[in-house]
Image (cartoon, rainbow, N blue to C red; front, side):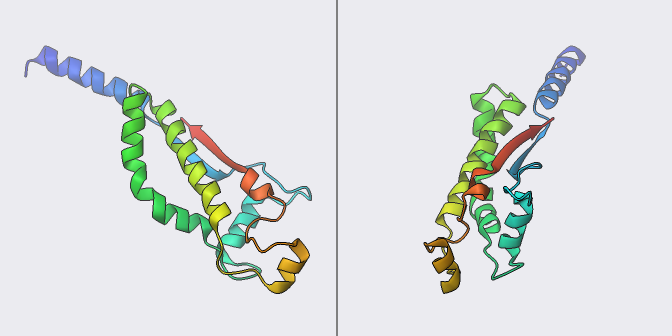
Length: 142
């Protein structure tokens, strides 16, 4: 390979790398709170690991199920966006957020205690006021 061609390839690869740097955060982002000021991320953590009852691993289950698809989805998003890393991460982040919401909505076991069902008026774990499910977020950080 000539020095000129090698230089152009190196320059192109450096430009691609600069456009594709960053990370995507998905979950319960800073500032999301319940009306009483309790951080949504704290409640999600307590639910996930069972601080006041049995663990309800909605987040870990979603990651286990969905994470094998993230690489191929990112590849497709990069192709779709012309290798725009920020846009591709946003597409994949939106997809992960959708999977997280679906995981919260679909979660059924362990079942709620009868006293909780009576208080809430329905038997859906992780859903009470819908603050948590409505507080999911996506953030792309360069």
